[in-house]
Image 1 (cartoon, rainbow, N blue to C red):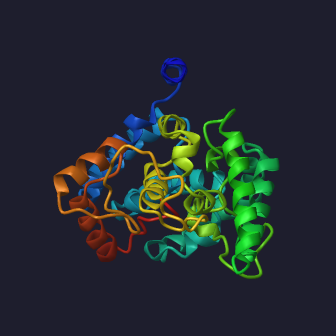
Image 2: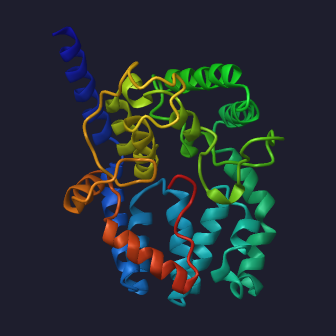
Image 3: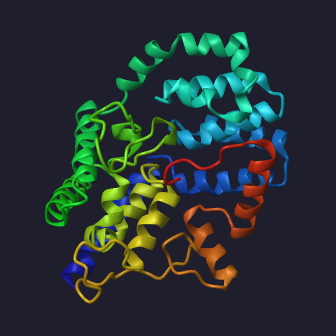
Amino acid sequence: MMKESITISFLILVSFFIQAQDDYSKYHQSIILVEDLISNEKFADAVKEYNKIFEAYDYVFLKDILIAAQVAYLSDDIEKTNEWLLRAVTDGYDCNCIKRLPIFKEYIELDQWKKIESQYEELNDEYLTTIDLGLHYEFHHRYKQEQENKSNRIKYKDIVTDNYRRIKSLMDSIPFPSERLIGIDDGAIFPTTIGGSLSNCEAGNSKVIPTLLHYDNPITDIGIDKFIVALKLGHLHPRQFASIYSFESNYVSRLSGNRSVNKPRLPEYFFNFGFGKKIDDFERVNSDRRKFGICSLETEKKLEIVSKRYKLRMSYGYK
C-alpha cells in the first residue's frame, strides 16, 4: 500500500512537472508524420513540417536537424539547408561529418557552407557552454574504461556496474544523462585503444546507452516511470528506449549470465527491433511503436528505399 502511494505521488508530481515543460510525446508524433511525408517523397511538405516542429521546441534532437537539412537540400531550399546545418554545428556536430554526407557533395562547395565551416571553432566553444562539461568528460572516460576491459569479464562487470550505478544516481536528480545535458559523443576525448570507439558522426550518446544495454534489467531496477519521464521531457529518444527495452526483455548481454536471476518486470511491448523478439502481429507492433513515437514498420521500410535512392542518411547512433 505504501509503495502504491509513493508511485501515485510520484506520477502526480511528474504530471505537474511535464505540464510546465515541452511534452516530447507530441514532438515524436509530429516527427512520425514528417517521416511518412519523406517516405512518400513529399520533401517540400516535410520541410514545412520540420520548420513548425523546430520553432515549437527549444531543444531539437540533433538527428532530426541533420535529416531536415538533407531533405531541405533535396527540395532546393538552400535557405533552410543553411539554417539547419548552422544549427547542427552550433549543437556540437562536426563539420567534417557533414562534409561526408553524400547528398552534400556539391553543397559544400558553396560560399554559404564555407562561411558556416569558418565559424566552427567559435560555434563549438558556444556549444560547450550549454552542456555539463564535468559529466561530458566523466562519461567519455567511463566509456573508455568499459570498452578497454571487455576481455576481462570480472573487471568489465565491475566497471559496467559502477557506470550503471552512476547513471542511476543521476536519474534521482535529472531526467537522464542525455546528450541534451552532457553533450554528444566526441571520439577525441579519452580515445579507446581497444574495443569500440566513439564516432563524432553518430550525433548521439553512445557513451551512456551501451552501459544500460549491457547491465541486467536497468528499466526494472530504476523504474519504468523514470524512463517515461525522460522520454516526455526530451532527454531520451524513443529508439534509445526501445533498444534498452529490447535488450532487457530478451535477456541480451546479461552480466549475471543467468536468465533465472532477477527477471525483467516490464509491461509487454513489441518493437521488432534487432536483438528483440519479433512477432508477425504487425498491427500490435505498429501500435506499440506509435505509442512511444516510433514510425510504423511500413514507413521504416519505405524510408530505407528512399534514403538509398536519394543518398539520405536517416539513422544516427541508437536513434
